[in-house]
Amino acid sequence: MTPLLNQFSKYPTVGNWNSQISEAVNNGFSHKALLLFRQMKQAGSSPDNLTFPFVAKACAKILDLKLSQSIHAHVFKSPFWSDIFVGTAVINMYVKCNELDFAHKVFEKMPKRDVTLWNAMLLGFAQLGSVDSFLVLFREMRLLGFVPDFVTIIGLTQSVVELKNVNLVKGVHAFGTRVGMLNDVSLVNTLISCYSKCGDLVSAEGMFDGIYSESRTIVSWNSLIAGHALVGNYYKTLPLYRFMSNDGHKPDMSTFLSLLSSCVQPEGLSHGKLIHSHVIQFGCDYDVAVTNTLLTMYSKCGDIDSAWHLFQSMTYKTCISWTAMISSYAVKGCLDKAYSLFLDMERAGEKPDVVTLLSLLSGCSQTGSLELGKWLEDYACFNGLRGNVMIKLKKYFIPPSKTVVSWTTMISGLALNGESKIVELDLKPNRITFLAILQACIHAGFLDKGMECFDLMTRVYNLNPGLEHYSCMVDLLGRKGKFKEALEFIKSMPYDPDAAIWGALINGYKIHQNVEIGEHVAYHLCRLEPQAAVSYVEMANMYASAGKWDGVSKVRALMKCNKVKKCSWAKPYPS
Picture: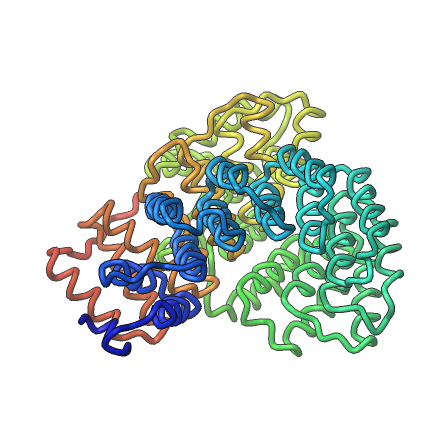
């Protein structure tokens, strides 16, 4: 017997196999679970209706469609293909692999259905954005006499909020009231968030006020605070925060991110400083997303000294951190300092992006530095930012009477205001334009707005996104810790993902210290570019940060085996 089987008796039962497979899956060892399943089959044991759900869950975790289809074939040949428990697991497996068509075929062939099976299919449609399919299936569920439960209503709210239609949200609200489910505070929290995202803060506050004080959770408070933060109501978020504290709730990262984002305006500086002191008090100043938001807040409020002190104290700086600081000095006309920081950013190994260059260009326009402006254009070409990116942006995006400062402001405004702003300005954006907008969304941390702009690009302007646009979306998802969604997004691309796509996830695993996703990214980078030293270095750094020194040793041995050499290159910036 292999080592995996040594822990069994001489003749393991199906129960023994199930116990070991479930333990492997629940502990995150999906590949081990699948290996056990294969050995189970080889040993002549027949899987039962408990085995298949565990194996399907393992496939779902590694997002392997071919393997999932293989497991489905085993299920189909077994007596348990019509088992509701097994069918639900197979549907969930296909949903995780971003394959709604396969999931729906399984659903349609099930001779018997219960609410759990309906929920699996409904949530699949909701999570993957198939709103129309969700609503059709939900109606069918009701017509056939199935009573929705809490999970169904959650899926329904997820679907209608994607449409940004407050009337649909009110419909869900009314339905939840009618079936008596609004006693569940988590559902009420979801509705508060839905109303907020649709801009109906009056209804959001009404839902919040309807929760008994002792039943309110931190999510309840965060949902309402986030709603007011979306429209910059710092004069509302601060009182809510005080009430929340008086109610005995301790703020978390989400609380502070919303509070700080509401203060990103000159008149909100004093409130922002107060929140900063609370960030330190509650030990949240180590979080890079919070510190970047603080840095942006100080920069946007014009307090460069505070921004600089915070920047210097940061142990880990992202591209967003550097760009926020560069932008602060550039807007104030301190081009020498902005350019010096740009060089420091390069030396620190952080790659500038389009927004970084836009920030420097705004400084060039104020100081009349044509030489640096020309060099920035060359730099954009040299570093693969789709050639003459600044000239193209100006040519296709900005009316002749606009200055570079107003151009940069307009790009930022588009990132904030989406379709309506583009239409209002009667602009005809091209692919380069949307690349800059997506970069701006990355800097601001606006995942929802980034998704809207990506959809706008294809749906309204009939522009086909390139790999660089997909890379931005993967970067956005990764920075928000949505690794499952990022991997699903990569799988849905019409292109084969290249090293740039996988590399876009690096920032995400650095921020969230997700070793599993780091290993996944490093594997693909090394596969695509086996001689590129940077992939191995990133992998070694990841293992070192996690304290996995045996992993560091293995990476070094792999580099030696593949004869990978570190290299350096001269950066062509002006002296």
